Image (cartoon, rainbow, N blue to C red; front, top):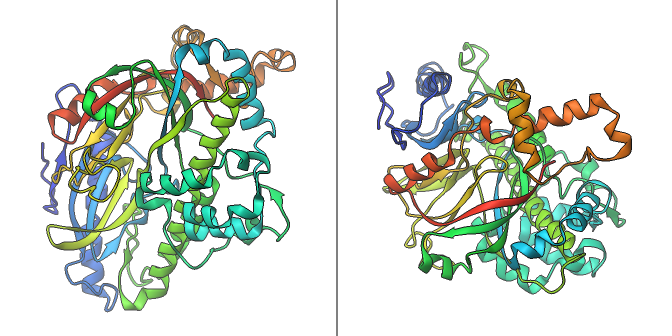
Length: 496
């Protein structure tokens, strides 16, 4: 499906008849497409702002989970020339997905559920992370991501959570992370207070799930849809897998705020600011300093996000090992869905922005990686408590090699809170969830103010607030974006 627009930008929708397009999301998309008008105004009234005379949005692809965002719709992939659009990544830089396969079965979890929940709450929310780091290590994370951790971890030995960091395994796992989980940069921008002193200290930022739709989830494989690909990825029916969805949390917000101020400062004072509030960053000699600083801030945050997902995975492994001994815990893949990549498409150099969409490249495009015979792993979670899917990318050129990052909201967070209490209570009675607040604690049970806030946060992410994940997945197969490998269902979800 294509839509017409006054700027003649090719916009392609990858949806089927079961998916409703919300008017507010389409209105937000219309505003995004006026970026080309702003670019033309800048070209006419300024000199040196753009080096590339053909600077423009080239094309846009809309994934099936398309819904309203904050200025840029979620589920939007944009290819630009001559500039980047920082808002088309947002503040949650490198929000993404990480998935582990295990040798565990459902009964291993169910039979130890109370102890596992207790251990998770302690490790994730009650001071049990125990991630000691030096300034050198924190700096290495921001500059080199997962490679930086690998190079500096020896100084920590096996203290705290590092007991679960197997250096040989982590080196092998770099091949199973998009861009090796390492965007190399030479500077840490504005984070000196976080870096701390040279002394060993416990880190309070790494291992943060964050809010909203972020989670760590213990899931079971309920259906294998492609046995050949499942075998390649060590996925088996009845198996336990671990899915992690989070990003750069406070570090991303730091980067986003700095980028936003920088964009406003370089926008010509003589021109009216964009009515849609979307500022572009030109790739030009005149703004070389700002251009380099943007990528540095972006990469600092992205590297932190890769590290954050890694440590969340280790924290869950530690939680399970308290009551379950000697189980396999292997990374399948880790990739962002809020990021911008320098890419060449059809021989044309530019920038692919993904806002709530993930890379879904074909086997051919994944040459020289562990996925050169399968295609890129794609993880599309349903809402909290709902089914999720593991797929393999098919490298659809028309969709800009992209797929959805989730089901997509059907109700705003505000409207979700107003849903009938009976519907919520039916959901929560069947669902295992661990949050920073334990509603069953004696000192919490009498605090109606705390319990009300706790319920409201869960209501915002309950299944009725999201679209039907099955229709989303069907669209991917119908449009040749990705093929289903397996279906998984949650056993226990951890929310920040």
